[in-house]
Image 1 (cartoon, one colour):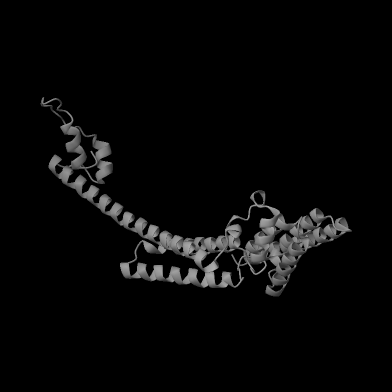
Image 2 (image 1 turned 45 degrees about the vertical axis):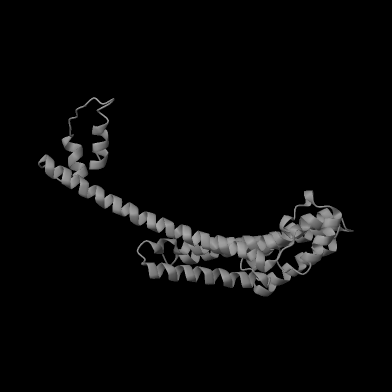
Length: 272
């Protein structure tokens, strides 16, 4: 048996309905020696050795449980910050919904009033904050195993500070991952491509300008491609030619990005 407690439980089950039972311990020499990492000794010594091994295993489980509970504490801290984000952002009910199938034209008009003053919509802000948490956790979760309580509390404080700084940037419309910006523009395109194409075009133009200013050319092909999709749906005069030009720019920028990736990979391989 793995430990004395389990052994006593099994032996106790030999008696039923008030009648006594009996038991006999039988050991496999090869398996027992592997488990004890030693040669077989007297049976009493084997029991002591076995229980010592089990005690070590249980203590390790306690340490693991303590570590798991701290990870849960970190996650709950993030969830609290995520809930508080709504208080800071103050989205309307329409902003939290943003589902075209459930919104009337009047709802969309009312919603646009709120969106027009946002550099980044609520859903994109939430997604960016979740991503920040995931990246932070991936980088830090392995550090908690040997930490003392003071070190863990310092880590928790650092997490809250990181999330607070990220929220401040997001509320100002600054997002490190431009794909969240692109998702922000796509959602607006889906909502307003039919009733307010000018609003959608302005959104894409602003993001394209931000990417150019931030020198984030790795994202630019996604901008051109999505703009082409919007132009095709808008059916403005000459929309096919305009869409083709955007797709050509997307193709050129994507090819350039692939070439850069190959060059970077080759460069790194030379130093391995």
